Amino acid sequence: MRRNFYITTYGCQMNQYDAGIVKEILKSAGYSPVADENEADIILLLTCSVRKHAENRALGRLMSMKRKKDGQRIFGVLGCMAQNYKEELISHYGADLVVGPDGYQHLPSLLANLLTTQPKMPQVWVGLNQECYDGIYPKAESSSLVTGFVAIMRGCNNFCSYCIVPYVRGQERSKSPEQITREIEILTQSGVKTITLVGQNVLAYHYNGMDFGGLLKEVEKIPGVEWLRFITAHPKDFSKEVITTLAGIKKFCPCIHLPLQSGSNRILALMNRRYTKEEYLERIELARQYIPEVVFTTDIMVGFPTETEDDFNQTKEMLEKIRFDFAYMFQYSPRPQTQALTIKPEVDFATGRRRLAKLIALQSQITKENNQKLIGQELEVMVEKHQTDQSLARTKSNKVVVLDRLEPIGAILKVKIIGMRGWTLVGAKEP
Ligand code: 5AD
Ligand code: SF4
Figure 1 (cartoon, protein in one colour):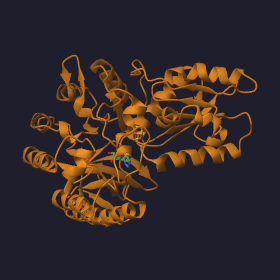
Figure 2 (tube, rainbow, N blue to C red; figure 1 turned 90 degrees about the vertical axis):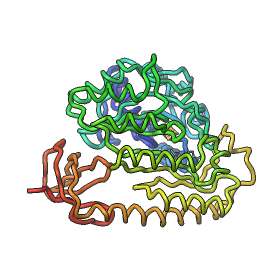
Figure 3 (cartoon, rainbow, N blue to C red; figure 1 turned 180 degrees about the vertical axis):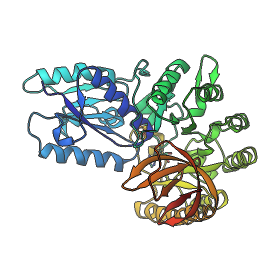
Figure 4 (cartoon, helix red, strand yellow; figure 1 turned 120 degrees about the horizontal axis):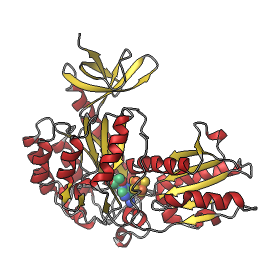
């Protein structure tokens, strides 16, 4: 039986983490991952549904691979799009295998069915059953051997009106501290030093009386964990209690991704975000007071239904006021099942495009100015990987620093920021 597989991952850190889950499940069933797609008998696309654009990329890829198909090869669509499109991926796009985010345990039996039927009988598993993948310990799936992701929860109950995630990933549930600790121990034993805890809203973590703060305190104690990050935090749960807890966690890298989405209270209410821009600002200021070196990054969306020029200007004002170190910026994309589909009128596409371009120009300037301020400073960095004869390192504030010589991967060094090359900081090791 042909048993080589190759996974292409789209979307967020949760999907990157899930790629590790899928790999472990398939390896245990006797399948082997290959580094070259051309050698794979089974091609798996681990997909994202958050915007139409992300879906189109994966569909385009599937269609182009199908055209070159050798008949024997198996094409699987996994993840959020599998849950969103279900059988349609087979009937309209020619996939052989469709498995949603809760179905990866079924991959071995689904693949066995596929491999033993002639002609191949397409297989679908799209239940939502609160799966947590306890007992599965993924290897580090990120681009560096010293950084690893660990999901601490799955699913989402927030129902932001634009967002498909609660429909494709199901209800929010937290994983047990024991499972999380074990996963981290296995990662650190393999050399991982920076752990990023991931979840749709990590601040909502709760398991038998343990909250997110309690979990951080446990994780900090695990031998080998040097730096600790998390993503994503919902502003509505970013309380004074959370802020003071974070201030006491020594290994915590003070870079917080706190999606703002919009600077207009009217739009925030329509988005069902459950905070105002004033509350958001207040929390940022409080965090800056308790954790002076903290930096913030964010997600912003433009072109949400009914967004006026005035709403948009308020978003711009928030960017100017807060001066995020980085922002992911998106144009609203209507998603099936979501509440926002009923909010009218929509913003026309060209207006959304124009607003997005303006916002990107503004934030790029701010990001650059924030980086320029670091020139001349001495910062602690961790070396993450080598690129020809350079080292790529990262600051605690999550900025990449290029070093013009090879330093040991995983080393934590003091460097002086000596300039910028394009967008990237350049550092030199202190003598
Ligand atoms: N359209 C555009 N962007 C979206 N996001 C989530 N849903 C949509 C959508 N329907 C963005 C949000 C979120 C990030 C992961 O993706 O900004 O924080
Ligand atoms: Fe991640 Fe959301 Fe995309 Fe799913 S839809 S991959 S949860 S960003």
